[in-house]
Length: 300
Ligand code: SF4
Image 1 (cartoon, helix red, strand yellow):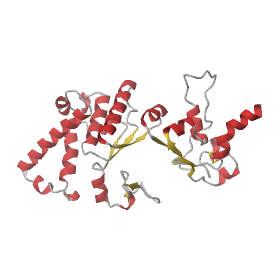
Image 2 (cartoon, helix red, strand yellow):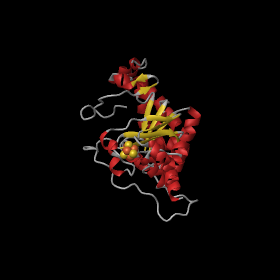
Image 3 (tube, protein in one colour):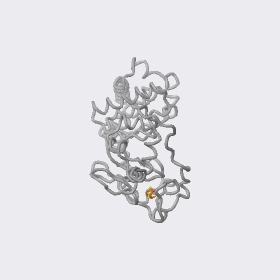
Image 4 (cartoon, protein in one colour):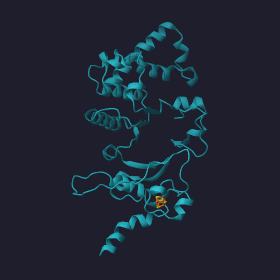
């Protein structure tokens, strides 16, 4: 989304493909047209993401007007926007669309909520309003960054059900960023597991949960309590998350990995396809894969 200005943000290499086009090669103006219209984002803190001094309906309407009338986006409506009478009409229409968007995210009494300020609404309501704002422009991709972190568990479940429903109804692809494995299991078709800034394993949700091959993914899955198993201690991942200003050499997970060998300290592993649609970045994924079997045979 290129939301971080340069400096301090800098893209030094690689490509970001969206609909077969590289977003890195886009100019600011081209990207501005993609943001909101084609890719939208929900942030994790609905409390601070909304402007406290504007009504919720006006904030959603502003997004609609911006995308329908921005001169820089070569939108045909702009030349009319400067005429007061037409502007008023556009604002009225945008406010009505905002109410429709609020209804779409199951907000009861949407007209009333559209005329309220953020502090008058609960956390769940505010996050719904944020989702309505993002959906007002009908994006193809919704990036949801920890969308339920600040909400209590029942509201979390409602927001997730709402996102799932919208995905089904409108076909919007959802890219969910979360540390909550339960939410991943519930919501996702594909998972990319990240450690210290790198994807270390990627595959279908079933594969990642049932048959992980990276030691970090194994540690994560092993640390979930299971209602069906009677165990004394949960697995833990020893050590701490590394300092990213001075990250570990080679594989960034090596100081915490029980499978670590010399090569791991020297060379960063590449993400390779170890079976169809299953990618792992580990020099020793084969040993990891069969480690339980080896331990079992040793005990015999
Ligand atoms: S590359 Fe080495 S240190 Fe990194 S996860 Fe694999 S075995 Fe562990």
